[in-house]
Length: 437
Image (cartoon, rainbow, N blue to C red; front, side):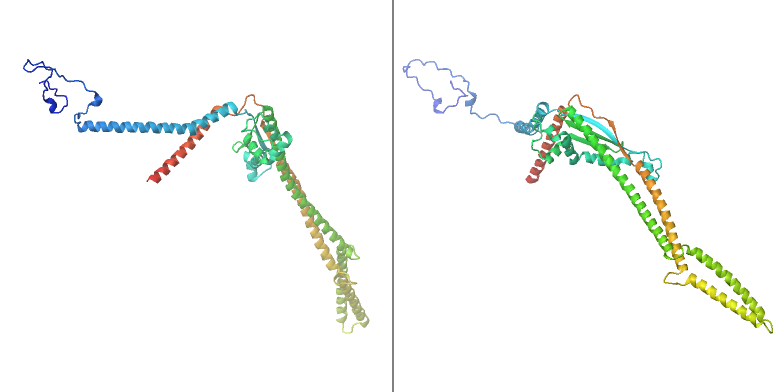
């Protein structure tokens, strides 16, 4: 009796101990009632009820889920830290620079075209393309390359002080040039602030010049357009000068050869004592023909005399003597016409040389005439090949700064930093996977 079934005790404690204050033999004292007492949760050491497999599995799943959530939170925290350090912080710095530190730049925009003179007489493929932008595309590209070259930058610096403008102390350090900057550093600044593009579909050259002062940007643009005009004139002038120079050289050569042929003809005419050997030869041939006719008449007369049985010897001898004299005269005339005499060329050879010299002179006259026509045509063609630079849009000073574009540049910086971080993360993940596998 009086045993607490929920109380843990030894077996000896279950024995009832007598009360020393109660006298022996007297009535029994009432026993103290022992009721169940509350036990602290931490002090409970009794085994709990056995869990079912489903409950045990649910408890394990919950533990795994809590571990996964804990790891996910840790990874998200690390990802946020990395993004903050590698993406958001650089983006904030870039935005601070664009919104607070960057010096405003004013851009002066202009457009110009390189045109060709009207070519009404052009033929072939050149005539088909003369009215299109392809006729001057090479000149436009050459002008674009010249304006983007270091030569144009040096000339602009000498005339308007390009370096001095960008070395002013109130320009931000990123866009400012050092006072002792080299030409290479100045050219980088020039390439960054001078933007030139050629549109092949329209044949227009577009130029944008940026500077810290709107008036200075307009002056730079005007001066660069004047440089382009000079370059176009030099390109067309050199081409025209080369063509006309070649034609004039051919004309001078034709004149020299024609003069040499004429001098040779004059020398041949002055070689002998006769100024007109051809006329002399014609005269000698006429005389020879006449004497040959007379000789034939004498031969006929001699034959008639010899036909008689007893011819008159005196007449026969006279006819024979006349024939001999005519033969001698004809032979002299032939020798004079053919054979050389007194160390001079014969009239026949001299005549042949003179005829050849005259033919050569006639040929040179034709060539000289052709060279003259070629020179005239080349000059006309050169005049049609003249290039003109026409300014379609004049540069005007800007009222508001064009650069920097604060919001656009900040967004662009964010995208750039995000892309760099993404590429690095993907590369590291791939390497880690390769190493672990």
